[in-house]
Structures are given as C-alpha cells and as structure tokens.
Length: 628
Image (cartoon, rainbow, N blue to C red; front, side, top):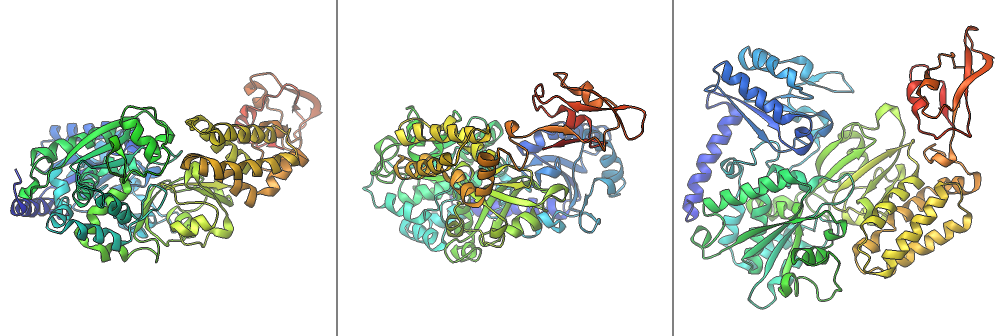
C-alpha cells in the first residue's frame, strides 16, 4: 500500500531495478515477450504464448525463462512478434510451429534463428534488433511510452517505467502551476481539433469550486484508426495518470472513460489497471497522503461515430441519445450532468504524465513552433510497412511514407494520403515535403484528425474514395441537424450517379455548392468536416471527376459500371481457366486459334459480365485478362 511519496519512491526503485534486470539480464534469466496487441492476438499470439509456456514447463526451464505479453510493437504488417531479452533479439511473423525451434535453438542453444529475423528490403541484410529497423529509427515514443516493452497487466512494470512519477510531482505543485506546465509545453488536443490542452483546463479551473469531471474520449471511430486502442492496450496506467493529473489541476475528483465496446482487450486491461491502482492506494481517497481523492469510472460506447464529438459523448454517458449539444455553453462551463468538465482524448492524456515527469521543455523539444511534441499515426492502405507510428511534429509526409512506411508495394506510384479520416482530406505528391503539424495540414485542405493515415496508389479511384467516406458519414450522422442529415445524403446520391456513369458537369458544381453549405451550417464537427474528402479530391483530382462524367470512364478501373474485363487475344492461350471461374458463364470459346495454334481463345460477353473479377484472378499467371 502506497501511503505517501516516500512509499512510491521506494516501490519505484524496486520496480525500476526489476525491469532493468529483465532488459539487461542481471537476474540471470532469459525473458520472452510477445506482442499482445489486437492485431497480433488475431494472428494467434495467445496460442503462441501458451505454447511457449507449455514447452518451457516440459523442459524444466521455469527458473531460467519467463514469458509474458506486452502492448503493441507497432509494426503490424510484420507481426506476431517475439522478443527475447537480454539479447534484445526480435523475431517477426512468428507462427505456432516456430515456437519449438525458438525454444530449442535460441533459449536452450543460444543460437539466433536467421529465418525469423527482419530483412531490410533495401540492403537485404537481416536485422536482429528492433532499434535498427528503419520503421523505428525516426520514431519517438511519448504517448506510446511503455507500449511494446512492459506488461500492461502488471502495475509493477508500469511503475518501473515511470508510472505515477508525473502525478507525484503534480501533487507537490500548486494547481495553477500544473496548468501552466501543460500550457507551456505546447500540448494541443490529439483528438483532431488541436485546441491547447492547458487552455481547456484553465477554463474548467476558473469555474466555481464544486463537482467537476474529467472525461477521456476513447471513442475512436475513424476507418483504419487504432491509435487510442493501442495505447489503452499497451499502457492504460499512463492514461489513468494523465486523467488524475487533469483532475487535480481543475479540482475534479471523478473521471470517466468512454471507450468503444468493440475494444474488449483495451477495456479489460483498463479495468485491471484501475483495480490494481486502487489496491495500491494510488486511486481512491487521500492519494499518497495529499488529501487529493480521485475515482475512475468506465462507460462503453455502442459504436456511434458521432459520439466522438465531445457533447454527443457527454449525452451518451448520461444515458441519452448520442447527439451533439448547442454550444455555448461549452463543456468546461457546463458539461457532464451540468457540471464543469474537460474532455481529452486518450493520446492527449497519455502525453500529460511525460510532461510532468520529464518537464515541459523535454516535451516541447520535439515538434514545430506551433505544434509541439509527437503525434501517433495509424499508417495503413497501400504501404509496405503497415502499423502504428509515433513521430515528432514536423516530420514530413515523405519521411512518414517512404522512410518509415517503406514506400508503396509493387513499385506502384504514390497517389494520395488521406489524413484525418472522414473529417480530413487527401494530400498529393506535391505535398510530400510538407512538415506534419496541425496548421500545415489544415492549410493544405486536410487535417491531423485523431491520426489515421491511409495511403493510396495509382490503382485507387479518388471519386470512389470520396464516395466511400460519404457513405460512412451518411451512416453515422445522428440526424439532428438538416444540413448534415439531408445534405450529406444528397452528396452521396450525386457521387453515386457519377460512379455509375450517369453524372453530368452540373453535378460537379452542385457537389461543391452542397459541400460549402454543409460546412457552414452543420451543428457539430461531424457535419462541418464531412465534405472535406469530397472538396479535397475535387481540388486535386478534378480530371478524374471529369473523366467519369464526360468520358464515362474510370481511369483507375475501379467503378464497375465504367469499366470492362476483356481478354487480350495476343496473350490468351485458350486454357479455359477464366471460363471455368466465371459464375455467370459470360466467357466462351471463339473460332480464333490461340498463338500456339492448338486451342481456341476465349472472349467475354459484356452483356452477361457482372464484373466480379473472378476471371482476372484465375488468369494471374498468363495475365491475359485486362481491365479497360
């Protein structure tokens, strides 16, 4: 039980010693850690862990080897990961059948297994250590501190990694001094808006003493985004500590986590962290003998994207329908149950302990003049290195895509990157040298958002991309205000006409006019930013829209009603694989002999073709099927 600062100091010293012994081997043991993030768990990481435990028990290695799971390693396209300390050997793409070999050759024989090492695609050299992989070299872990190195289900490892040191310092400071520290660090909200965190806290602090709340927004709903989930899975105590520091600063004694119910692993680890902190006296009444009391409550969201908007989130916690409120009053004045409340997202709160522990200058040392610190991105789409990355603000898009992301698969050309999810926009090759920060991305017609970054190549149709995001927005609109409820539906109808080959040039004008009206008149951020993907694609890829409405063609051959599958007569060998694969018998022999003079080439009846692509898949070796 930790009753005062001295108790925390003593426990921290013990936990640091134990954690360092694990990393350095001073305890005389080998330590096997496996990625326990959702991505790796879906690739049987749990079963791999169980197999390690089974074989280690069978070979009586229990006193020499430990096995546990940690948070997300980040490099999702190379998982499941296994790392072995103290050598720091990293194995990737580990399968269940590889466990016996790792135990025999590495844990017992001390031999590194070359075939499981990462291979640098540029040099073809095998890399043993995580820090030497290009994916990690330019990253700086602040919000992701501890993720991938500590067991998130063991509070002692979290304390060994610095947990509650920031809180201890804050509790020995004046409340205004804590707010000033956050203000001077330059921390801005990582949920998408980029509002200065310290200013938000200042507004709530200035309200009369009484019931106040701190709310953590863990309702991460952007397609392809998994930043908040990974932080909660990898180091939930960092977010809890950030919430407690915020609570002390504004005078709140209760904090609410609002987390998507689709994140069961994150929720379970969050509950475990709360229970362990309460058991040690680090949550509850009279924390560390300071008189400060704080309790944490967890609420699960039902998956409504609009509940990422802070006032809709508050309504949902209160048991009401998740719909935004009119502002003012703002939540810092009248929020949860009518009391002053601050709402910060998971990543924002995860940065707070670092600022109090290491100091505002350490945080501000990263980033740009107006965007300090680091930012976590979920890098996905047409990219070689899919995963979770944390980079200093000011890193260029080129560095993110090519140095960290490893470029575009198959030698394809980069076309665009969508940042900010449905609220953001597309940035093109002309923007690759743009430093990533809040203001630069907005100036380019996009936004930081919560951190989704979807890369697209030459095979993506940008009209189809805009349609995808508009379909998402139409499904997720709460329907409270007319511009969003009806306007986005009309925009989707226009985009559908265009992709079906029925659009006109007039539709393009109406699309832009609708977009501007929705931006100007919608009630909340969902509607105000909903047209961004359409406006950015219209600005950067107007030629593709024109090709769809004037030439009735989809340059990327994605829109089904504007493309055809045809058989190249010069390549067809008459094998009939395509005809056998066609589900509607649209492919038949012709009377033309193939180049070998033995079999008849085939042709596709366009009136029967349903454009399912089965013929293309069946002809990968010969490549006689083409899109036109």
